[in-house]
Image (cartoon, rainbow, N blue to C red; front, side, top):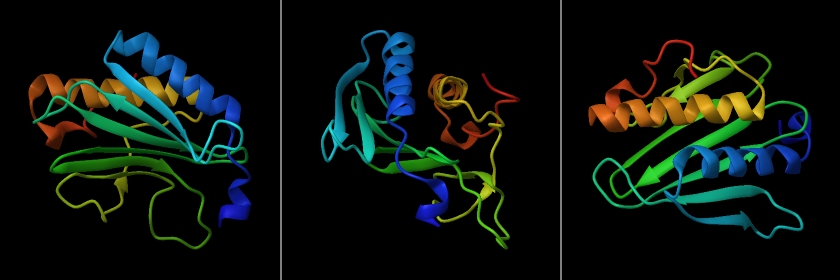
Length: 145
């Protein structure tokens, strides 16, 4: 499956970082390209707030052919929005792994496929749930952003 996705999309990762910085206005406390900025596999964004903590993290991957992963984690909570095309899979292509069962694959409320719009949608879902102090509504936003 990794070959079908293609290599990591450097331009998409830069777009994701820019949108996080623009939208979260100072809440992004650190960014890291893993393993390095020359040949990144993942973008890690440390955030100065969370549901039950003052720090959390988004780990983001984008591939050139198709697909993305936005994995959120903090002390006792994690969830993930993703898009993967898997032939003969019973899982939805655009899916959400909920915090109460991270191995489950639910249909995602995010329908976009462009890095900027997907990032805005992920942030809208996260922020709405954060303001409601209710992680169960992470995937409940209708057609975000």
